[in-house]
Image (cartoon, rainbow, N blue to C red; front, side, top):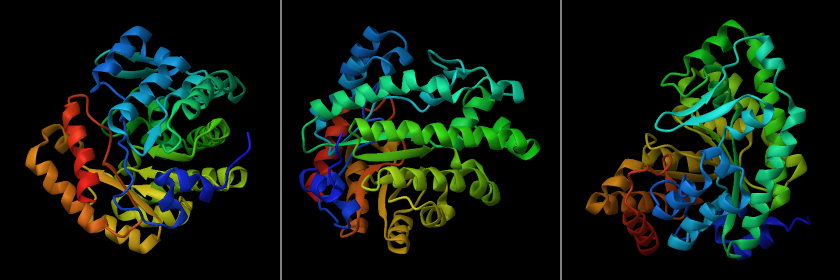
Length: 353
């Protein structure tokens, strides 16, 4: 497909304006996990699909659940419905989702586990996701931006080595310390295939990319530099060579004091901030880096709703006014979120902004 310059796309899709250097007010907004189990229409489609991965790999259904929050709330951007564990699944590692427990993988514990992963296998499943992106770009309103994404190598590796999510990512951290000669090649493989995966999404119609590093905050600064910052820098550099007009957002969740360094050293166009980041920290990050800042309402406050939600929205907006800012949550929408609270949030951002 032919690639339209960013400035031209931004003239139709205001979500993209901050990436051209132009602050928008009210700010553009979308919410992480905006397509999900809090919506009754999502639950209906999920039941029809059967398993979670079946939903991810059925373009018609994945596109439908991606479109649901756009129809309901009119967000400025839509994010592809998929999962960060599509990448290890495509590589040949067995991935399954256990109801009520989350993902389970056959853990990589040695060289044998690493050598069973094959980059040559990824094309089939990556192309299915790309078909979903193509459908979305055709079906979305023309003024709605489309976000493609992947998990960052560090975060994806924590699941691949640990076999499941964990509170401290101990298995991956120990492998990184004890066996860097094994962990390093795993990270490199994930860098390589993730660049290919994101590039396919751009070619299929994605306007923006986000790299989710949900477990970045579990690492000390030296390991953060090695396993979070450097792999992301390489990915951004390669993607920019292929697609110079595509903005890239990083989300090193929990990076806190390392966020500005991460932005400068990786070259991302914007950074998403988690809930623990003070609003003053977002202001400082915007001033220090000159990049787009995204965040950071507490997802639990969106569950609670009421007057406290309105107050916090007003505080965030007041602090970020005049800056290149995208309103979002500090992490994903929770399953227990009342849909009417999301409607209240959208109204508040657009009213007070």
